Image (tube, rainbow, N blue to C red):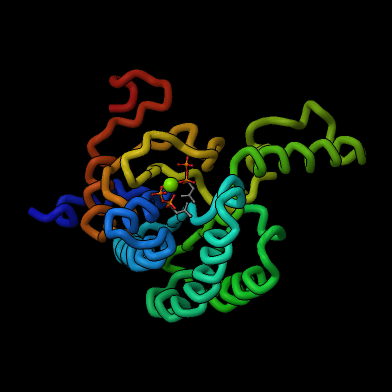
Length: 246
Ligand code: IPE
Ligand code: IPE
Ligand code: MG
């Protein structure tokens, strides 16, 4: 039986997040420049988005560029940024064809103006699509996001719009860039690294983590199905006992 046939529709995660890692190593193994790996990762993005939408997943968040990635060599950052514009431009048809709306989280103001504009245009053009939201994490890190949220809350307290007693987990969630997005139930990381790299630290409090050795450019629909099947075998207890959740 294929992985897809083993997926139980009634236990589908509403939100899957992916740390797309391993592009550089994929290219290196072929004796190519790192950007060759990034270019070949675009097909994996399309496959992940199409398969998640077909299944009925409501949100797919992809970690495309972290705050820390700005420290990579200038040439790689520039190449990644131009790949981003051209990909958004080219893949808009995939979004329309699959009824997918584009969203973005992160410090978007720090992106080069051309990319910011391309992104905002694509977000506006696809806003009416209903089947799934594809969320790109761009210039994103949880430290940035949580610090930004705390600053906004502190400003409201200082302006007399909030008192410290109003601050709770729900209020903090509402000040994150993910305020309109449910927390992911499943987080996938490719390339065999076992770390989170500053991604959705608050939101993954109770997510199931799935690590695969596949490098991102090799990630295909079957790999997403396999991760979902693995997720569905787990017992999610949220601090309760096994008997309580059965
Ligand atoms: C992930 O692949 C893509 C980005 C972080 C932009 P990497 O570029 O990190 O590839 P490796 O981890 O060096 O192989
Ligand atoms: C995480 O990958 C960021 C993205 C996938 C965009 P990195 O390759 O930057 O993470 P580290 O440096 O290995 O932790
Ligand atoms: Mg990496």
